[in-house]
Length: 596
Image (cartoon, rainbow, N blue to C red; front, top):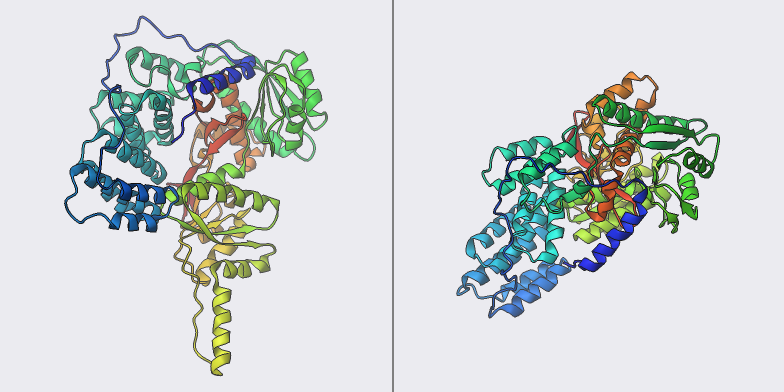
């Protein structure tokens, strides 16, 4: 694993701080008169070596490692077959089981991987082998969706790794805790007695309080010596207190014209979050609203700055975002609600951060979910056109990085193409062609049952809407692939209950937390407003997250460490200041969407 140098990391954070200075408040101050801190023992031992112990079989082990680096489990297995059946010492036995666990994982046999890993841990207490076993366990639990177990592995690794790796493992631990649902965190809190681990769990819960800044301050007063305390993870050291002074925020949205329904939905979500915060007693910004249906984004931005806005949220269309990205100067930061296809050109002044409902984020999350469930050989079915091509490209990239392979792919256009596309991807057409050739050779009408190719073990159905998915999923069963797990994007669910979705029962998808039950009070408030925007429900969620990021914009100064639980997904930021979303796993059951 490569790690950036501390100097490069510090330089990147300085650049971020400069870019985000327009809305960057100081970190919240801690209460020095709080109760005495708890002293945790979860501290790393600086004297531990992670170098592998000597072995007479280093060549065989290295050959297996090299094969696994290329996801070649067969070659790795052959390398290990050269080892003697007996006479391995404890360290070699542990290393053997560790490599067998990785082989099983690459093959997609998840339970065997866990069994081998447990045997590796039982065989040796060598720190280097424990480090490798825990690292692999973290990776495996994370992809399997066992986030509490993954986080616990990461916190244990903090005690083993050298200083250069601790920031990475703190980030990994914190992400897994944020991926876990609240019920799982509370259950874990009741099942363990390790004070350091319990403090991690409590910090994750405290961040979900209505006033997280106060809760985190109280946690820090109790746990000042905790490994998570200095610095706090996720950009929490930049968390703004609920009583911070009001600011003036400008919203640049299309409220008339073709995009008015979308703009209104975003505005309704933003206002629902804004007034909910005011109802809790939080200080809220004065709002300036500009209709981009009647003026350019650039003109609205200039007007917002001249009227004293300290932050601009919007615009919504990609073309309008490009206008602001092309400015030579940006006096105040922008949280754009769409994503440019390429990097934003450099500009003097404040940042342009991009938050979007990008399907590429969904495709990456979907690949992780399917791989964690055991899929390795994928079939992709997608609509023709630029949208389908873009989503497939993002899916393939993440799938390849994980170690999966795409063994077949098909596109479809009009409805009559659905069956032809599915048959082509499954190889059924080729099977039928072979049967015709045999009939012609034998000059007899032999009985024949066409079969799908045996390669795929998972199907990615990248349909643009529910109607397409409902038409195509039954065709998989018709063409002898009904037993394959099928994964789809959130686009297959309109956000409105529909009895026809029974045809999608058993389908796996990724969905926004908003549509899986997050923030019910905000959804009720939007529905009660009777604006009609509830039919654009994911755009409501985008507005809610625009408020979240706008009110906690300073947290983005943490750069890659910044992490926020949003209603559109788990939010982080890349070096190009693009917000990425990790969505939640879900399925259809009796026609209704349910979280997994």
